[in-house]
Length: 223
Image (tube, rainbow, N blue to C red; front, top):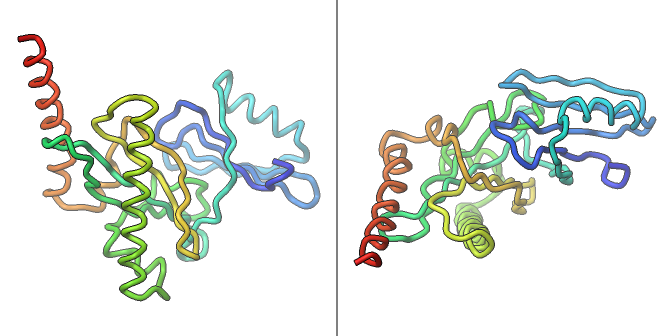
C-alpha cells in the first residue's frame, strides 16, 4: 500500500463483489477505503494504517486476501469506472468459444462495476475510445480475443478443463489490456443485461452440450 498508493484488497474466495475493498493512501498519511454491499457503496477515511488494519480485520474476518495494484480504469461521466466481463465456454464441439464481452459501467464513485450497467462490446467500445479508428477497434478486439483464449488455456493447464470461465479485465485510456480475475462460477448477470435472448440462450445451452460430450466419452470408456 505504501509503495503503490492505491490498491484493491479482496478475499481469495468471494462472489458478487462483496469481499472487495479499495484503499487509497493520501499525502497526509490517512487512508480512504470504499466497498460495495449489494450495490450500496460505503466510503470512509481513517487517520492511519493501524486503524485501517482494524477495519480490514473486521471486514474480511479470517479470510485469506490478495492485494492488487489499482488499475487506472477508463471512466465515463467522470466517476463511473468501466471494466469488462468476457464469458467463455466450451461448446458442443469441445471448442473454447467467446460467447460475449459485456462492458460494465459501475455506479458513481463505486470501487467495483458488479452492480452497475452493462452494454454490448461492439456498441459501446467506440464511446470508451472515441479517438480510435475502425481499424484500431478491430485490431483491439482481435488482441482481446487472443488474450482471453490464452488466459482460458493457462487456467486449464493449471487446474484441468473448465466448461466455462468468466474473465474480468479492463482497458486503460491507451487501450492497454489489464487482467483482473477469473470466475469459475459466473452469475452471468452482465450478459443478461447487455445481450438479447439468442446470446442468453447460448450461454446456458453450451454447458449442457459440453456436458453431453463428457458423458459420451465416459460411456465409451466404460464399454
